[in-house]
Image (cartoon, rainbow, N blue to C red; front, side, top):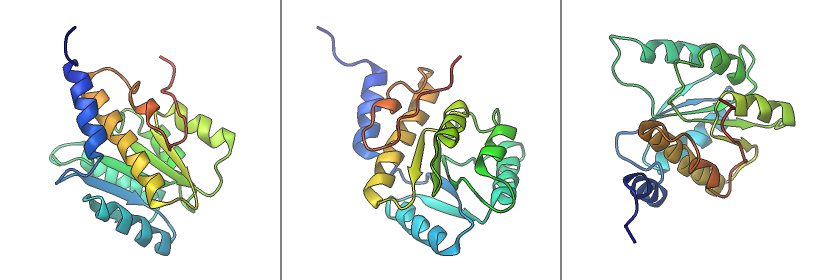
Length: 175
């Protein structure tokens, strides 16, 4: 009958392109310097501009600085370690839930237990990657994040983002 809806076309385009859009900015938060360098390299290989931070306090600071005027450029993506010495990513996201509600978040963890995944799900995190992870795993999470961002703009929730294979199954928080 009819062709694809505008939303379906946007989702298809995002799936094909992933997050590799010019001028997309990612905030990378990781307390381990070597891991931060590696993940930063992976994100840059996907054509993202990367701003690096070392811990939860810096994550909170960046969110506060970029969420309110006069700052006009927000992050298109946040990639953060869960467990850091000062504040966990879960604590920061819980405190800043309304501020980052439309920014896709990918969490990475060496301790991916069920409780962490449940908390992430409730906070609207689009993917949780267990360390160690491959570049392929990160790409799948980036596709998922890209779809979540498009869905947030279109207003249809994260339904399409949940169907991307290769990432942890996280459904949106209940309404």
